[in-house]
Structure formats: structure tokens, C-alpha cells
Length: 363
Image (cartoon, rainbow, N blue to C red; front, side, top):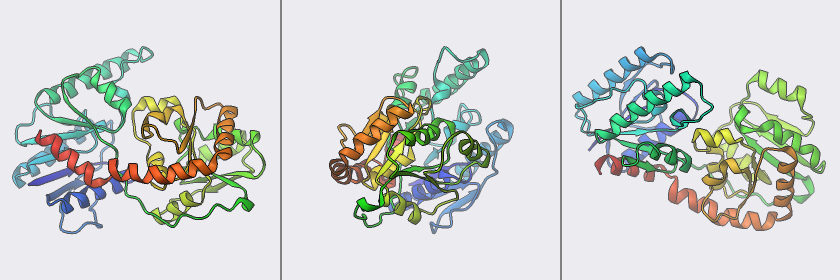
């Protein structure tokens, strides 16, 4: 069977996501074709097509790219096309495709499909058009994959009978030996990723003022210089260590293993966008204790006891949650190590993800 993976977004998590899927597809015995802006050098024996990079607003250029991909797939005799970034393709994918036997779309964020009363008239019109286009594909038999319960409920609200599937976002773990906790060197909190507004880093930095001096924060990941400057201007960052650069998987794994707690002070709008938190999944995979806001509670395993959740991003509430986790750190560590990696292996592997793509398309 021939499978084509299409994603025309370069860099970021897309590179690891696409290469992981291509490798897993080959291991599962599929003849694998990839249409992407850059070749996947980490996977051998792929059939590849180079596509142009287009931005969300470049609809005409994006449509031309999609047409080229569909024509290529037709000539190659592709059985299943996986459109891996519906977030952009919603405006570029043709509403009727009869040259490919089966198509599965992957939606990473669902906020543009929400009928929020606070949206402007232009935003409401955009939502109506996006819903109409998505409904037309579902009615012709396409499959839709989402990664979070919130996204699932958002889509199910207006397409109740579609082939909509909730599938865990895949991650590839880079494991390192679990380091013994050194109580003499203090307690290290870890925040991973860019300090985008919805991820709540300012609240976490402010929370340090309610915590003992021996508790420090490490921020790992390349930052927007302007955002970091604003944070250092308005917050006391004297207890913050910045690893302000791209960090390879091996080094990132070491940060996860060394940290006392992984803290995710995400705002409610992150949940509303409907996207999966890769940092949360990585923390679970490494078996590390977590403190997270309620914005991420639905992405934790059911009944999970390796995390403490707080209701809001208020700095004092975050500090109380961190104190509670530290007071119960040994139990949290045992639960996280026992249940986190097992959950990731069973629900978030690339092999299971590809299997879900295929089974959805063949259903």
C-alpha cells in the first residue's frame, strides 16, 4: 500500500513530526511518499517531492502547491494521502478530490471552528466558511484526526456524524538515566519552550517571590529577544537561568531528568486553541512530576497522580501548587515514573499514530 505524507510547513516541531511518521510508516511496511519543503535525510528510501513554503495568507500559492501534490499522488498511484496540517490546508485543499482513493486530514488546533460570542463579524464569517469547507470533506468520506478532547468536542459540535478520531499526538522519547534527587543543591523548576503569551511564563517567574530562595527556575529554549527583554524588565529574574538557544533532544532529555518539577503555567486560551502540549507529553514520557494549570488537565492521563494541577495562572496560586508538589515530591516521583512513560508508549507512539491514520482512512 502506498501512503503519501504532506506537510508544507518547515522547521519547528513539523520536522520531527514528519520524519517520525515517515520512519514509522516504513517500519509498518508501507511504501512511503513525502511532500514537504525539505527532504527528510534521517529516513532512507523515501519517495520525495519538494514543495514551496507558503504562509497562511498566501492562499493562491498554497492551492497551487496542493494541486501539484494531488497530481503527483495520482501519477504515483497513491492509496492514502495524509494532509498533516489542515490548520492551513482548510483554505487550500480542494473541496472535491476524486483522484485519490482515501484522504485523512490532521487538525492541530481547533479555535477557528469555535463559535465564540466574542468573535468579530469577520471572524464569525471565517468560522462559518471553515466549518462549511470541513463539513464538505467529511460528507465525501474523508477522515479527520485531532489530538485533544477539547478539539474533538469542538468539531463534534457541528459535524456529529463525521469520521472524527481522537488520536494522541506522537513523540519520540530520548531517555537518559534518571538522576538521583540531590536535596543539597536546592529545587529546580523547569519551563520548556518559547515564552509565548498563552504559556504563562510571567506568572511562573512572579510566583518565585512566594517560594523559598532555594527554589530556582530554568527556562530552556530559544526565546524571542523582545519578549525576553520585556520579561526581564517587568519581572525579578534573578533566580531564573536562561538556556536561550536551540537545544538538541539529548540535552533536553537531561534537563527533564535533572529537574525537580516540570511547570506548565498555561493560560486557558491554550486549551481553547485545542492543541496538544508537546512539553507535557515529554514530561510524562520522562516520568517527571508536573505542576500544570487546569488548561492542561484534560491532556493528563485519566486518574494520573504524578501531577498537581492549579485552577489559574495567578502567581500565588502557582506558588501554592508548587509547594504542595514539593511537600509530596516522593509520591509524585513514584507515580510519574510508574505511569507516565507507560502512557506515552501506549497512546503517543509514532507507530500507533500511523496505524490510526491508516485505519481511519480505510474504515
